[in-house]
Every structure is written in structure tokens, then in C-alpha cells.
Amino acid sequence: KSVSFDPDGKMLCSGGDDGELRLWRLVRGEWQCVKTVECGSPISSCCFHPGAPGVVATGSGDNVVRLWRALQGNCEHVMSGHGDAVTGVSFEPNGKRLL
Image 1: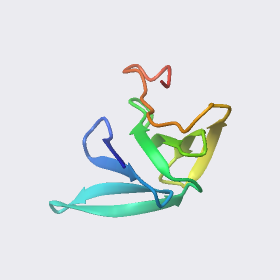
Image 2 (image 1 turned 30 degrees about the vertical axis):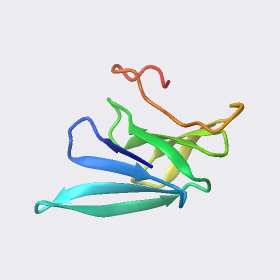
Image 3 (image 1 turned 90 degrees about the vertical axis):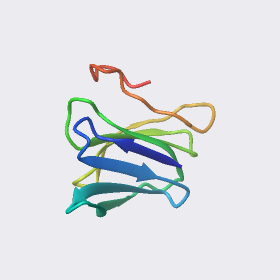
Image 4 (image 1 turned 90 degrees about the horizontal axis):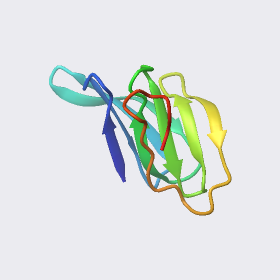
């Protein structure tokens, strides 16, 4: 359901109905999955932080936004309390706020 490039264009993240966040890296001209992280709920949106390598935000069907140190597979912060599924996440270009 969602795919996003990192700021350098060397990695991308993807997420979907299986609830797994996947990180992909271009290796010898082909995209290869280098990490799969179980998020626990279908992912409707994902994006990289513009200034913190490997930090990814996900929005999901359980009304939650999560911040991940994705290569380590660690959920660093959970933002709950949304009234409905979170269908979009995006960092401001300076990375100070998550929308």
C-alpha cells in the first residue's frame, strides 16, 4: 500500500496489509529486501525521516503512528489516540514535525 525512498535514494521502505515493514536496498542494480519488521497491524503509509538515517514512520489501521529504527527492528515511539486509521504520514522537510 505504501512505498517511500530515503532522502539519498539508496533505500526504500514498503508496507502493506500483511503488517510488515520492509526495507530495500539497491544491490548490483536490483532491489533486495534487507530487513523485515513485524508491525502488528496493516500499514497504510510509511516514510523515512529526512535527516535521521534508518528512521521510518508508519501509519496503520489500528489508529496508530509508530517511529522505527527500522534496520534494528526497534519501535522507538508509539503515537496513539487517532480517531480512525492513519492513512498518511509525512515528515516536514526539516524533520522537526511528523504530519
